Image (cartoon, rainbow, N blue to C red; front, side, top):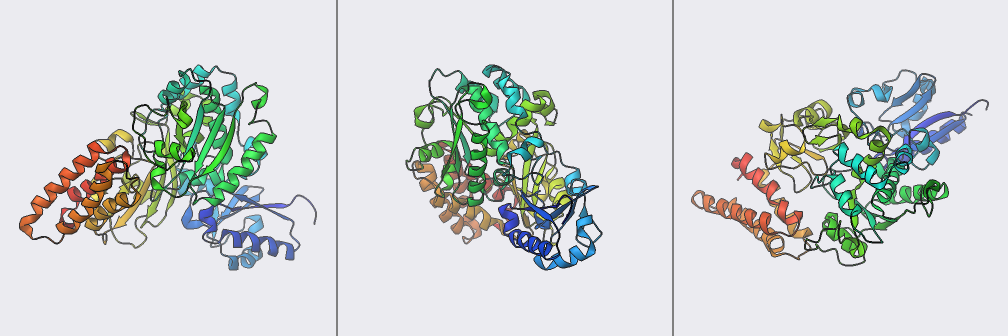
Length: 513
């Protein structure tokens, strides 16, 4: 063996692993050794083109050439055909960055996904990593917060609260101890952007949390990670250890005299702990139960200290804003929805995966241009946006832009950016019932509208679909009244947002009831 080894890239992302990426990587290494080929196999994150996983890329003089979906049995044939030189094959995709799915995206937060080794800090640095932190260390805390404010970044979780306002509130608190809490309890149906970032580009999250800590005067950060993400846990721990060894975390961050470190804490599988105050209770070792607000977590959060609570996508976006400027980031998007959004396309869809682009892409463009329509080939009847508590949109509303205000105007929400597609075989009465049943199952039980209202909602919907025609109007009115009570009286978004899917199903698909 002479010369530099051939570099091959196979995702270690759990989505790719679930369809055989580990087997492909192992068999590829074995076959290369058998043939005397000096090959280096790099386990990256996924590009987010899940219908093409396992995706194998090879480094050639002309750039990285992709092949997919590759099965273990394809490897001898691909090597015979000249895959290592980027040769033509039925599975050859060419330069993945030029693939129609990728070419039209605007990847900022997810720019390194599928490109870097997530457990190699030098690879992260070679792709622009930690430029944001270096820029932050040259600014005052107030200047950092102002840049985040000027960028227009809003929380990429449920409420879309302006990140700069939240950070400024924590900055202004006089407390000696403050915290950064990353909500990585990604439990919404059809969402996987947090997981992809933690498994494919963990240093971006670590860098973003470090910048947040320096900006508001916090010295300790916690990542509250859902128990269902073991791959992410291993990747994060390895990345954190490297960051400490290289001085990006610890008592003297990059010689600045600033202290900041991060610890991973595992959740126990409760959906309610995705709500920020329940998450803080769980972080403290208590039962995951919603707190009454005020006071807000920014004033009295973790261990009753001022706390910034943001999710993974929000914090992983911070480095690009500091590195490239608030104006650069703000130029993407539309209206009050600035920057890019990571949309996760799932459900009954032909081409499911991750799409990142500026706010303003329509539902139709996402589902048909990127998603390719349904996997069954039947017409798309509905999409649910924003997780299990998101509204259902009918085909007549598919020209709605995916941005906060446009969706809010139709009693819908973007949430964490999950978009789940349904064909015309879906029973929308059953989906409305599922929303109430889900709320009943996942409620922490602290407030009556959520605890009792969700159970009563299941009973009412069961009665509605079996009641005689004359009684249905009264039952629908009672369901609407129940939705009002839950929306106005619940302590948190679980009970307060359950009416979104129920009301949208009743409004747009009355024939199913």
